[in-house]
Amino acid sequence: MESHVKIFLDSVEIPLKIGIFPHEQDVPQRVVVDAELYADPASYLQTVNLDTIIDYGKVYNAITSWAERPQVQLIEDYLKELITLCFGFETVIACRVSIKKSDVFGQDQGAGVELFTTRSDWARS
Image 1 (cartoon, rainbow, N blue to C red):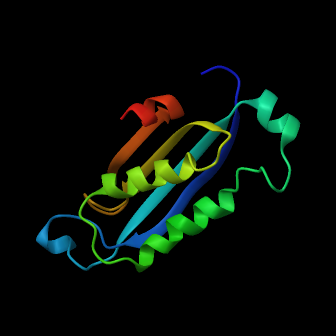
Image 2 (cartoon, rainbow, N blue to C red):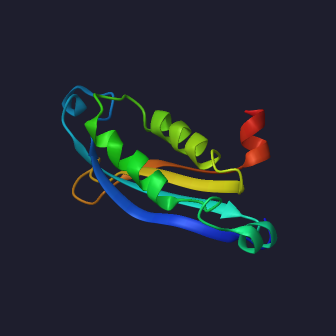
């Protein structure tokens, strides 16, 4: 990807009931979510206004609402949902999202999943 505008959320921390192991069931874990939404600067910046803006507040609110959900087994389920949300903005040409369980192997010893994809690659999947 060449020149781009990046709209991002950095280190959104939320408690999620997530995981497949018995000790993870119905126990919120500290999860950190990052999202980067990319747009073409020529088309985005030239025409951006309140009606066309890539609204990181909408993405933030969706992520934080996950804390109210019942147990989810896989990070990938949230990852797919987040990518679909990112491409819900017409001007987003690519996105990078990551979701990390922060303490899965001990305090601040995390593991997670990250994906970078373009709109066209995501549409083919």
